[in-house]
Image (cartoon, rainbow, N blue to C red; front, side, top):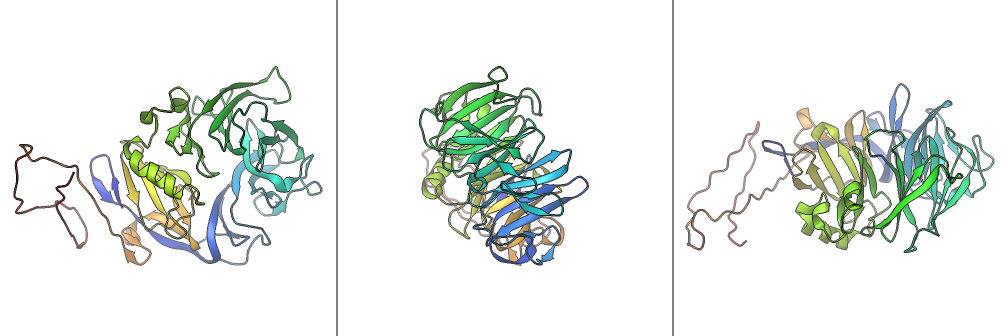
Length: 399
């Protein structure tokens, strides 16, 4: 629970309960980017709640859903700003700033040509909505600048050499923006990364595969995240920047952003890789890249990297199923509530009503001559604090 800053090591911020009274685990936390205002939605127990405002939640905006494990993206067309969500079981949901619409072949707008309850992983690529057909190697895309229309199939069976099924896809850009350099990345359950470039998948003259690469098997469905001009992929091999991973051998551990904690990361991936809740988020206010590690339900931990120094640490007691940013503030969904995280002010060093317990281990030192026995008689820790913390120190000579 200590975060490595540029010139010091600080106890992390705490959390306060932002929205309470949710019926079950908040397994999805989605941000809607409106034209004039943003909103935050919590998916819990097959329902969706508006949790933008702090306090006890009101009536559910949507109910009757099969589960609370959804993927989402924001899209803007001439018709307005939308939040598109899908889970591969229920009909995709489209939010326009005031109303949620379940999308099928007869809704307004409608998606035709595909059974919409099979669609998941909504992704915006070059002004065109894409979806994955769950548990297949097929993707579907809509007409440009549209949230509905006749869906066209894009089958990757012929290029996915290892088989499996599509897990995730995302837009990957080389220039840290959005433009002609954007590529569409597909990731399969076997760790195969397939990259396409172009604008119209129906035209061979404007659409082509760049290549296929093999990385470690992805961890969960939320395994991709834009990171500046790169794309991060969460795999059994570690947390990989796509640009570096595709230019080097899979056997090179130094490619991974997580190489400094490779032992801890590999152990967590092996033990908990099948648990729901692996995801990533970048918190710009604190220059922190957060990887959520679902040790068990209600016992999640986080591996956290300082984006400037690339130093890592571990957070505990943030029992998060998923993180989200609302107006650059960090939130997470937990068991029956949504929390505002990394808080400041009176709740800065409190996890709700509990004190934060931090543990720090300094680098080992031989204290001059190696191999000579020493007797330690005193240790003087240097702490800068605005309160009176309880401190316990010890000496570890086994390294």
